[in-house]
Image (cartoon, rainbow, N blue to C red):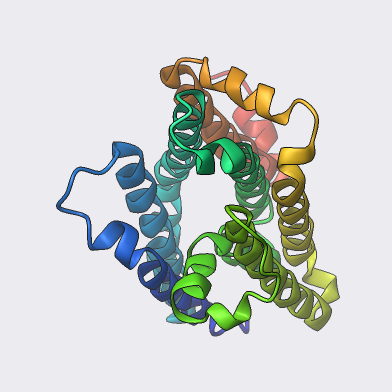
Length: 277
């Protein structure tokens, strides 16, 4: 069988390079200085996920299915931690918003919050379907390789701001300039996903999902400060103890793993597992 996405690991590797370049001045250069722990959790789990995807792509293309399956099961633990990392970033933004830390977070905090909530929903949906369709090689590979596209805007928007500012053609005033590069990055991801969908519509469901989620992320983040009740909801979220939101994030990740795995079992295997011992 010819494996799909022959160059998938290069796409993920490119995402790793963009992540390092985008966060180099704001995270990697400051690694030895006091940094909120949430950044470390998010950075380590996100990079671990990207490296995991590279390894999975390489093992399957090098005809090492045993290693591929073994590392795939390791994702059952990694994926909930990845979601916890996302939630930790929401919690940090919410705490800064509640503390009225600065005008920037007061204006854009709700946008960051809803953007990350959208990303979490996307990751849960994509990984659930990757496990559910694990016996369909094209769908499984598509859903797994689609996950880096969801938050590609985060590092690439910083790359635009740092290295290719001419790409920011929206030129909004004040803090909203940050949303410009986020929307432009999401727009490029939308076009990328559209091209992959049109290349193989029969197995294009993962890229349709990417198109939906990044479009939703663009719209929600751009209009967040104008949506009635959004700031109040974010302030209310900030009152929830972080331990509770982190636990809920972990449970959501575990649920995606459990239900995806169960729904991907052959009917006979599922019935057998349901029989009493």
